[in-house]
Image 1 (tube, rainbow, N blue to C red):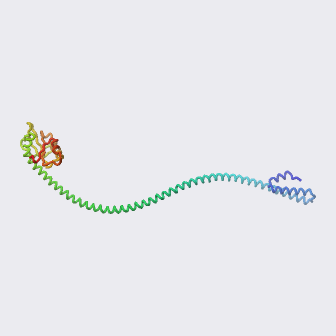
Image 2 (cartoon, rainbow, N blue to C red):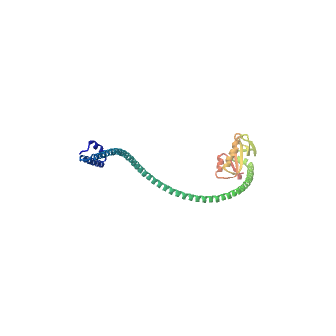
Image 3 (tube, helix red, strand yellow):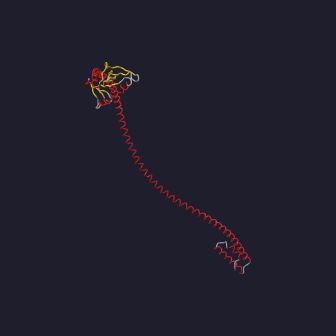
Length: 302
């Protein structure tokens, strides 16, 4: 006996093993129906088949729900796999980043190690500098004491120097006074000897006496002239202007020209300069005097 087509379609939604059991059961029912059975038995069988059919429908409905769940799970699985792929890519990138981080960390550790070594050396250097600073401060303290002692000694020296300066000033005043006295003495001798010497050496005949006097210079100021007198040479008037120096130097020659001769230019007629001295203070002074056109006499010439 064959099973109806409609029933087979209903059983297609049932799992394979259940479908086979149901088919066997239905075939057994049909087979028994063909046999001589009572009406009650037949009705019972029909009830069983009806219940089975209802159960099959329920199973088919459950199967459709299960397939929908399976489809949903498959979609979730697909999305999960996509997320997993993305996660694997992210993990790979994180692994690469981790590798780079580890490389950087390794370099950083090396740098930190070098810095730690440098810090250690710096601390050692600081300790050395601190020790050197301590020694320097000790030396500075000793130096401050020494400086204070020197300052006290300097103050004493300054007082002594002030006394020496005062004494030196007095000495210079005395020497200056002596020099003036010596110069005046030299000039006094020259007053008597120069008329003869000038006539003998330069053909100048002195008229009147040689003397000291104050004259107004070319600026209108009074100027002391130590030796001055008038004379004639070859019929021309000359004015003798001279000065005595105990020790003559090039510097004194320049001072005589600047302070006396230049200031009398344009005031006196035909200036004839003369210097008398005991001695010269440096070589070539005599040549320097002659180059300047000044007559020079020593004390022993007078």
